[in-house]
Structure formats: structure tokens, C-alpha cells
Length: 360
Image (cartoon, rainbow, N blue to C red; front, side):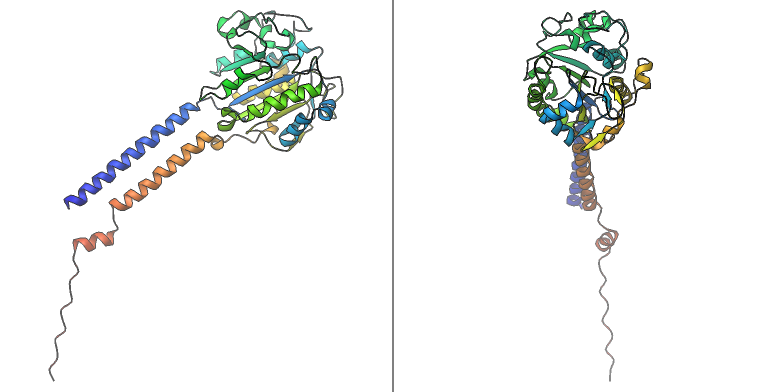
């Protein structure tokens, strides 16, 4: 009996240790992936390309056409104005206002913007620009028309926010990749402005396509895209006034990809840059900044929907808990034998008395 009691005590201790370890590991994984949960994604990367219409990009950009075929394509997505700067302003503030022409910089706009909305909800962000010096809110060395975070005074006058404007090494974008391949604390919202060669502004669609063919697979293969609910959005700021088959008058390439995006999906729904902003807002429950984004269609049809068991971290939690439950059942079975076995051990079998032999 003493030996059996010792074995039971050992099994109880073992079960307790397993339960403690599983809870600790699960809590570590949850905190490791503790980004505020979004409706469509928990992390998003946006890349802005320049000055080409949708039909031209599909015809001359082999990689971009293939990416759209693999994931999604918005055939009704249109720019909202000309030239570049007003389109960029619309994407992160829902208005054009003083940003009605190129060459206006910096801090000229006092409107509320996406950064205000993100920070007010505890969401983190970083905006990368090739050839920028990190923290330079004057935009030295870059085409400031293509980096809208420099337009807003509550960003340029805030040193902490300026530090979130990060320079990226042209083409390799190593600083961006370091952020996406970190072990945790990934930004929820990431923006990348390539330089005026890589974004096809001063070069060609094919040149920009080659750039994207190099950087996009790295993004989709990064730690955050492999383990979290992440999405990548590639879009052109403006086109050549080629009308969408359904939608606006300046149709541009716009494609969502990544683990939360659908595959092989094409839409003809009418969208604009305001739709992009409204999609970000709808994803995290942010209040629309004004009527332009609040009235714009949300791009919800491009996503597979929310699921807890999307990232590797969440699946690890499930596996750990399943293993612990299995161990608990096994240990419980060893500790508590069946009633029949217990009765048999308490009451030794009584041997039947031999029948009396009848005499003849």
C-alpha cells in the first residue's frame, strides 16, 4: 500500500508540473503574439508604387500579374486625384485639403490622420522610406510627395513619431525585413515607400516589377507573415486616366496578399484610396476620419475571415493543451483503476466448497 501511495503521489506531482508548464508556455505564446486582434489581419504592410494604370501593369509586370493571380486583384480600384501627393494624403487622412499639389512639405496639414487613430487604440506603426535618414521629419534625400507622414504637423512636430519614420536601404530594405523577422513586437501597421527608381516613377513598370519580385517573397516569407495573421497591400498612387470596367476613372493595380488574403480571387467592385483607409479602420474598429472614408466601400471581400487558429503560435497552443489533456487522461487512468479492479483487490476471490460426494 505504501508503495502504491507513493506512485500515486508521483503521478499527481507529474500532472501538476505538466499543467503548470503548459499554461506557462501558452501564456508566453499569447503574449508573444499579443497584437490587438483585427477583423481581417493583425499586421499589415503597404507598398506604394507610382504612376501606372492597371492594364499596363498587368501587361508589363509579370511578377505583379502572377501575384494577383495567386492571391487577389481589385479591378475596380481607382486613384482619387492628380498628381501624386493628394492620393497619398487621401490614403492616410481621408482628405486632400492643402495637399492638392506636389512639392508641399512638411507639416503643412493639421488634420487628424491614421497615426492618431492607431495610437489612440494601442496599435503600433512604422513607416519606412528608401533613402530616408531615420527620424528625419524634413524628408531629406527623398521625394516627399510619396511619403505622406511628412504632411501632418502632429507627426513632424512630435520627436517620438518622427523616430517611427525609418530609413530603408534601397532594394534590400533590410531595415524593414529586420522588423518583420524580429522574434516579436512586430508593428501592427507598416508602410513602405520605395525610392523613385524602385517605385517605377523614374524608370519603368518592368523595373518596378523586378524590385517587387525581389522584396515581396521576402516579406511573405518573414516571421510575422509565417506565424501571424498578416496581409500585404500593393497599390499604385495614380494611373493614366484609364477607366475601370466598373468603378472610377483612374484604374490602378491594387492587390492584397499574404496568409489572411484569399487565393485566386478577383473583384470588380468599385474602390478608391478612401476604401483602403476605411478597410484599415474597419479592421481595428477605428473611427472614420471624415465622410470620404466613412462612405467608401470596405475591402472585406478580399480576406478569408478571422480565425484564432491562423498563426503557428496559436496552433502550438492547441497542440500543447491537447498533449496535456492526453497526459492527464493517461495519468488519471493509472491513478484510479476501474471499480472492478478495486473490488477485486479489496475482496479476494472465495473458492467454492467442494460438493459433497454422494454415497452409493
